[in-house]
Amino acid sequence: MRRPLAHRASKVGYLRGLGRYFKDPKAGFFGKAFVFLAVAYVVMPLDLVPDIAPVVGWLDDIGVVALAFGHLAKVASRYRELPAPGPEDLEAENLLLERT
Image (tube, rainbow, N blue to C red; front, side):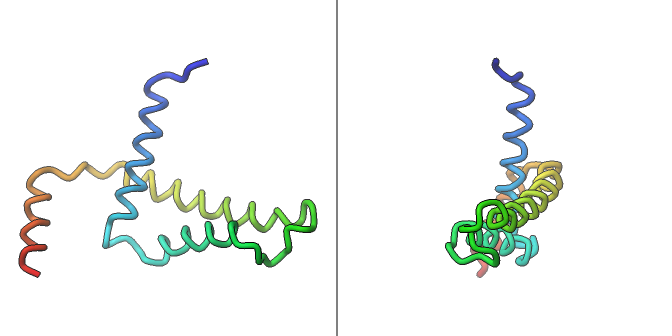
């Protein structure tokens, strides 16, 4: 069963919002660092609770991923609602870059 086009477009909007978030120099460093550290925590073999324990070992990974996804969902919806940068914004950025 295929999803409606509007459903797919909403996901693209969230991805654009995440892209805007990670490219925004004004966005908080700690939020971005938390996402990268959460990914590193899940991928790294060292955990607070070893993954050798069948269910309990995965719960800490699931908790960290849930916190990271919650943060990303909140940020993506906020950045998704921002207007797309227009040509005048890009020209102003280029002028600032040329001055430095």
